[in-house]
Length: 193
Image (cartoon, rainbow, N blue to C red; front, side, top):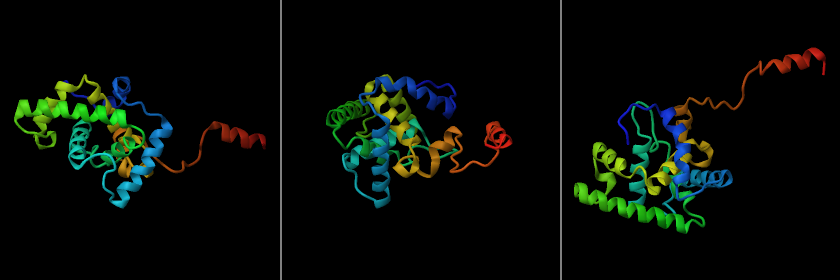
């Protein structure tokens, strides 16, 4: 990862370039279904369906460094880990195995570099160093894509808790907008249609 200053908005926009490197392809219906189920799992306080507690801790820590908490909330507060667990559940055995293999390789690199077995046990500087070493891999691209999808999904579907993702990109999520809606409404009324 580069050390240059990058706004969150620029970071999120750049995600579109990394999605093709991911081992997972998500369609809008798949994302919406996963969001809905992830929301229910989070509300019910359910255990993870696919991820072990260790995997959940690792993916949660990785996503928390991809979109960290600082002066604003990040991926952890948005509940991204529940989204990841749900997306990987149904018929994603091959992709989940690729993620597990990538995680094992990553943990091996961590152990060789720092002597710690887990990413979530490292301090933030060490975590950033390790992520910088794998940022060009399909494993990182997949976790990054899942993090962003979970962060920007509809809150009622499981990710983006309390509209955290929307706040990060400056999106105003109003259920209704007030008049005037546009010139065409006034034009329509003047014509009496």
